[in-house]
Length: 141
Image 1: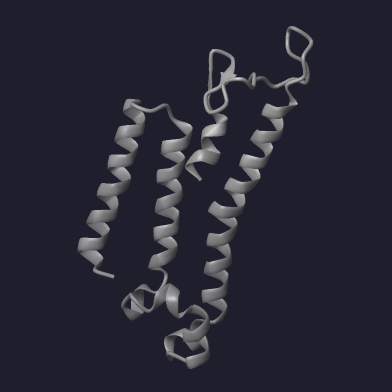
Image 2: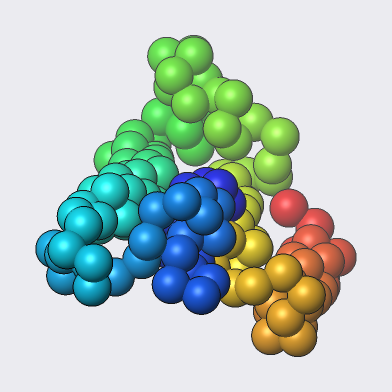
């Protein structure tokens, strides 16, 4: 995810990850060369980010919500399907792994979208990790 999000970074008119591909929003460069590669890579990265980050998390929430009775009763069928996702947590915290996925997504976004060494990046990562530590110590999932 971090590498995928780094496709959004440009330095001096060129992609940071692939410095031979010019950045821009149009179809043609000043020289008349096409730079549709950047637009295509941005679209692929955006779709991948939405799929991995949002779609999978929403699918897990819906599946656990629909099958909550079987999960609460520790049904063998539900444990076979969803056991790897929630068996490590207390009964009231079966949703905790979704929170872990969201935390990873936020961290990857901070690492991929912001420049390395940026103060906002460091503070954002610190806040996310400290929030995770406090929630884990207080709630003890």
